[in-house]
Amino acid sequence: MEIVFNEFFAQGLAFLGAGIAMIAGIGPGVGQGFAAGKAVEAVGRQPEASGKITVTMIVGQAMAETTGLYALLIAFMLLGK
Image (cartoon, rainbow, N blue to C red; front, side):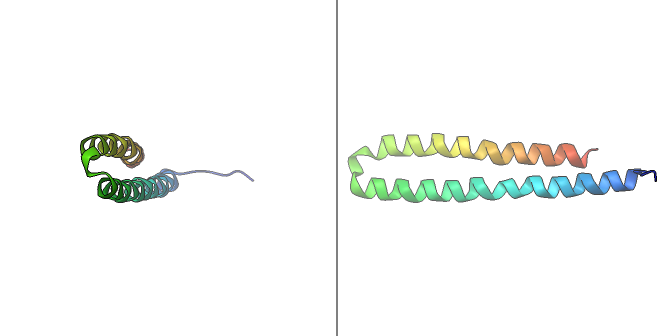
């Protein structure tokens, strides 16, 4: 029994993979919200350190955002196939 894959099947799998890749967008959103909440708590405890806390939070959120951007890039690459 020979299995034949046609272009429609391959395109359907690419769409499925793109959808699964976009699930990775949930992680950065949750992580950024958690980081912002903890930064607000930290500024509430030590208002004089708000500058350092804010800079650290923004760097951490930028790192978390790259995960979502990589997932978006992979999804676009799969849709282009």
